[in-house]
Structure formats: structure tokens, C-alpha cells
Length: 166
Image (cartoon, rainbow, N blue to C red; front, side):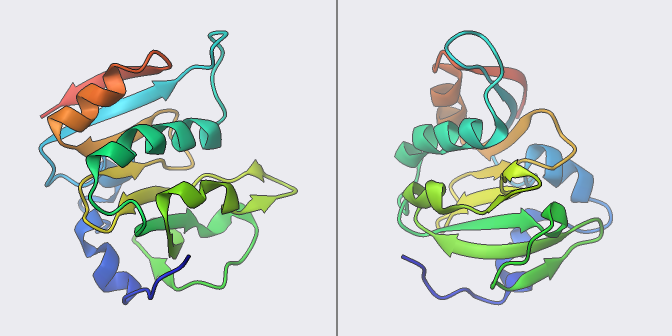
């Protein structure tokens, strides 16, 4: 289920993707949230999960911390080597395709023969209760959310919250 997208510039303005803030937002998420964390994910055998698998599991945990799980936004870096039929946002550092849909539609995310599973750079529910930030060059997943949402992620065995700031 897709819903009508607003203007991508207006829709993503809260992500703080300007000259002075892009690097911070791409790593930690927007500064306006109560708390921030860097999250690593491990498979049951202790090896690192794929980026997409980690994001899917993180979204599963965070679904309980939003009032809008059926309305979410996803920004995909335009450098993955494919084009999406979606509005495009140009930030100071990267271009993104902005798509929408329910949080449980993660298996429908793009896949590329050259890149394999493709992870979105940003994910957030329509109520903006949290933002996942996963830049293509970053090792960890950034999370901007409430303290209770970050505590829920921290309590999951496969996640390691490496840094936390409030």
C-alpha cells in the first residue's frame, strides 16, 4: 500500500540534510530527538547481520514505538545503480529517492544484481516518532528516537548500542 507523497523537500526538511548538518543527520538522525544511538546488529551465531536484515529487525522492534506503522517513508541513495519511479531529493552530499508505504512492506524494497540487498538511507514513520539513519559509508545504524524506544532496542540480544547521547 502506497500513499500520496508530499513534496520531497518539504517532507524531508526535518531530517536536517543541509550543509552544516548533513553528516550528523546521516550518522545519528536529526538533532531534534530526545535521544540518539548507534546500533550494530549480530546474527544468532555472533556474526554481523546484513545491513538490510539488521534494518528489518530494527524496524520490527520500533513498530511498537509509533502510532503510524502503516504509513512510513524511505529514502534510498541514488548511487545504488538503479532508478526508482519516485520523487528525488537532492541534499548537499547525496541524492535520494523518497518512497512511502507500510513498515511491514520491507521485503518489497529494491534489490540490485550488482549490489544485492539495498538498504534505505533513512526510514521514519509518518508520525516521526523515530528516524533510522544508515548512510552507505557508515558501519552502524543511527537511531534518533525517544529514550524508551532506544531502551527497547538495547534490550534485544542481537543489537549492540555502541554509543548513546541525549
